Length: 118
Length: 110
Image 1 (tube, each protein chain N blue to C red):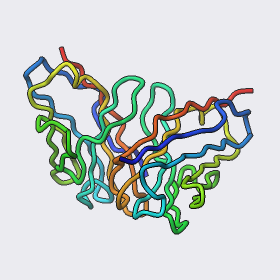
Image 2 (tube, each protein chain N blue to C red):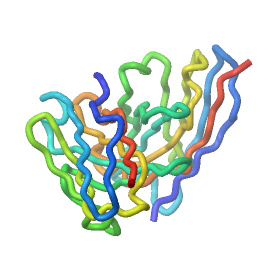
Image 3 (cartoon, chains in turn orange, brown):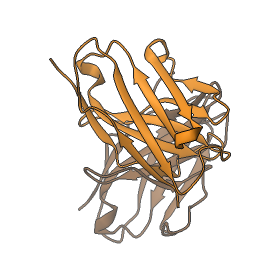
Image 4 (cartoon, each protein chain N blue to C red):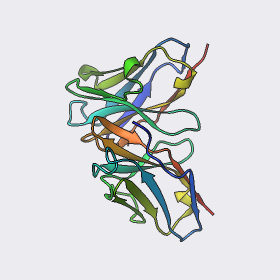
């Protein structure tokens, strides 16, 4: 059973960079899965941010593409998210999730709330 | 790429059925058989209920079923139970954008 755990600062200043890491256990990040980030603003719906394959190939949501970087660290079996120039609109619960073949998410992390505020 | 359209709310009495629609375009829902549905209880993690339009993961009750016609996918919950009260989100593959989520539907068990 795959387990995902997000970690990172819960508070980020406006115009700063949000940085999160997702630790993967129970599976190798080099398995044939895509690894994604999804966010959910308080009281709102889900938004896919982007994904990465173990090869380093990435796909990003066009609405966030200019500000997002997702990287994989095979040595630590984890992947990360960086979102730059954040504003209050980026306040959300951030989930990491995995998908076999890009078509659905079968495992999710518990989520971590990131608040953008000075 | 816009979010897929779902009704904000749906409801039914225990034992009844409720159907939630998820409307997209020929570039997403209508173009691929890769629609999935997620259940999310308040404060909890989304849970996969249906994938590839109508397939159920192991452990999901057969009261949950999915279908698709044209650009609209549907999730039906039969024999409603109190624990089915939750938010439901659809998602579709959209080619260059692997995941587009729906706007979400709050299901209330009366």
